[in-house]
Each structure stands twice: as C-alpha cells, then as structure tokens.
Amino acid sequence: MATNNGDVLMLEAAPEATKPWASAANAEVIDALPYIDDDYGNPLIKSEVDRLVEEEMRRSSRKPADFLKDLPPLPKFDFENCPVLGKEYERVRAGKPPVRIDFESRYKLELPPASKKNDDAAWKQYLQKNQRSLQQKIIELENLEMMSKHGPELWRQNNHRLEVFLTRMQKLAQEQNEEIEKVNRERKYHQQTTAYELNALSQEWRQLCVKNMEIQSACAVLETHIDSLKREAAERGWNLEEKLESINPLQPQ
Image (cartoon, rainbow, N blue to C red; front, side, top):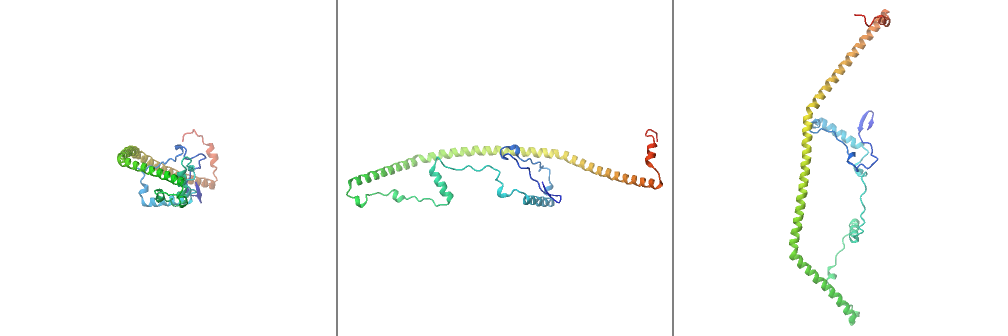
C-alpha cells in the first residue's frame, strides 16, 4: 500500500515468487456482496469510486502494455515436420505477396528446342515427358469425376459430424451456464438471507460505537470534575492522599 501525506493511493498484492498462473490457489479472493451492497447505485458514491479506481490505475506499477509479462513465453514454431508450411509462415510473417501459380506452363505441351529438332533421342525424351504429363491430367480428371460422384455425400457426412460436434459443444456450454446460474442463485440466496443478520450486527456495532463515545465523554467529564476538585483541595490546603489512606476501605459509608 502506497501513501502520500496519510492518503491511501493504491493497494497492490505482494509479488509472488512462484508462477502466479500455475495454481488456482494464488487466485485473488473477492469478498464483495453484490446482491445486497447497493451503495454503488448512488451516483455520488459511484463517481467517488470511479475516481479512486482511476487514481489507483494511474499510480499503479502495472501498465496495460505489460499485463502479460508474468505469463510464460509463447512456444516457437519451427515447422520441422512441414518445411513447406514453414516457408509459407515466414512469407506471411514478412508480408510478402503469395507466389503466383503459372498454369500456362503447367498445361503447355513442350517441344524440343530448334537445335534438337532432328535429334530422335530428344524427341523421345520430350515425348515421354508429355506422356507423363498427359497421364497426370487423366488421373486428375478421374479424381474430379470421383469427386463429382462421391464428393457431395462425403461433404454431407462431414457436415453431419460437425453438427454433432456443435450440438455436443452447445450442450456442454448450456450445462456450464446452468452451473454458473446455479452458483449465482445460491450466492444471491445466501447473501439475501444473511443480509438481515448483517444489518442487525451493523446496527449493534453502531449502537456500541455510540455507547463507547458516550462513555468516553462521561469519563472525560468526570476526569475534568476530579481535576477541579483536586485544584480546589490544593487551594484550601487539604492533603487528599492522606485522607484517602486513613479511610478504611471496609468501613461502611
């Protein structure tokens, strides 16, 4: 807690030596009673609370820019098992445009250069290369035909699996929301049932404080009266201490 001329400026928890995210035991406990504390609804109190919060945030050592510095660092992506994806990741990270696919050269029929037009070996080599390219295109056409025939059903099955997964996730989310709502209802019930006892204890505390102040005031009046009597006795030359010692405590008054 930092103070300035006796004024409280901010409240900060002591820094943890261990990792604060490692265990839920390090979580901060909030002892607010939102279902019975209605002071924040008062505009004057709300403005004062907001002012204190802004003041604490301004003076706090924790800034919004470094609120994640206590968390462990992110793992480094090396893409050892997929170098192609690694190169694409580096390209996107560097902000470079994607590599354009050249479809013209991919489907273009290649011929031997003019210097090898009469070379039978060169013609056989390019013929085999074009035959391989043609066979690749035939396989691609067969794949497209199979996709046209069986693709819609596969997509329907995949969509069905996604719908089942979505339904399961929605059910889990609904169960979690019901658990949260149950906890909130229990908190509201306990706080509202305990509000009467808290109000009674608060009233008793106020009455005791008033009674203590009245007792202190009465004691102060008595001490003033005793001091005045002592001064009067001293003026008359009476020795009160000797008279008090000569009185027998057991003697009836």
